[in-house]
Length: 278
Image 1 (cartoon, rainbow, N blue to C red):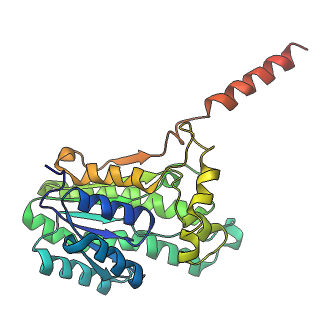
Image 2: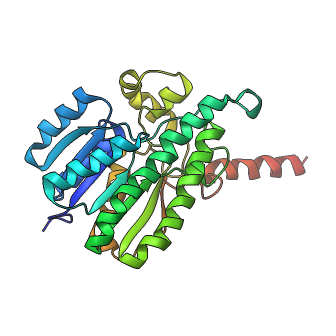
Image 3: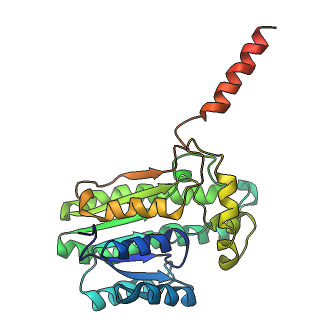
């Protein structure tokens, strides 16, 4: 039996990267999935590839009317919603505090935090009435540790997602609705090219493998994280295997934020030993 048999899910930001990988895994595990995103051509193509188990709904997750329409379309098609993966997000303005533009600050919070709030707001009454459901919010290790993003604003938005997750988990848990977040580490997607080189989404997605080469050296497990690593975590949180998991932030980062890398640390010890032996 597949782990998500009979479940209905919404995946936002489903047209590429983590969202696409998760949508594909959800369908493979037996779910029916509403794919949400802004790139209609990619969304329609993915829905066609996934067959009757998927539909695409063009959605700007920062707009309440769009999110409400997405939820309504899902219920009209399949009668219920068991899983919401609030995955959609984007980079923030890079640079320090003195050059930060108010408009860029507000836009990042709209894309990364307001979208999460709206998704939860509009699925909550459905899941509460069902007395079941799993909401998964995509956060980041940058929300727990400073210095893990090129953007202080992005880090702040992801910290907000983690705390919002905890808060709503306390509320909805009383109705058997679970709310958790996933904090990816260095995952090879187009977000790095979007943030640093300000590439458009399509071009940035093509740069993911270049990002992988850089990321491979940054964590104890010496490879870049891949979208499927996060998809696997999302499958777990969406499934009944996680029926008693609520209000947690599941870090999937290859050990990135746990401490200093072993080999450089040992090299530093040897350098210090040589210094004292003089």
